[in-house]
Image 1 (tube, rainbow, N blue to C red):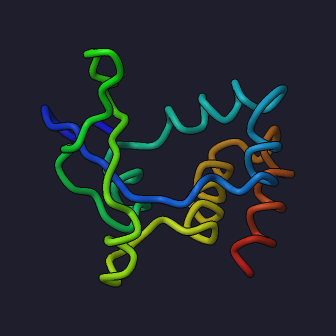
Image 2: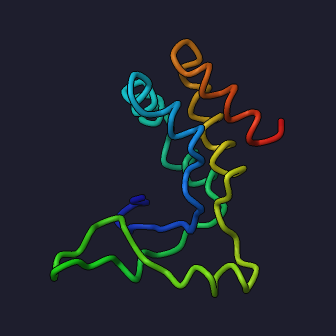
Length: 116
């Protein structure tokens, strides 16, 4: 994620399969559009922690912008914030609110995962 002129990273678990299934396919364009309606500040506020992008992933000498690898096991063991399945669900709920006509089912699935 780019904030101003600086790339930021966040540590997360994988997106839950149920949310991934609702986002891809016919809902993907609606999800992208709904994300595009969020301000950088709204996205930044939805993430548990952002920090400067370091440890960028490099494959065959090519840097993958926006993709990094961190020592996740150490990070979690120290009790640092991680975007959990519940965090992903809450994020998807915020996105879905921008287009409930097309993303209502995503909102419902996210609500169950978030426990709300």
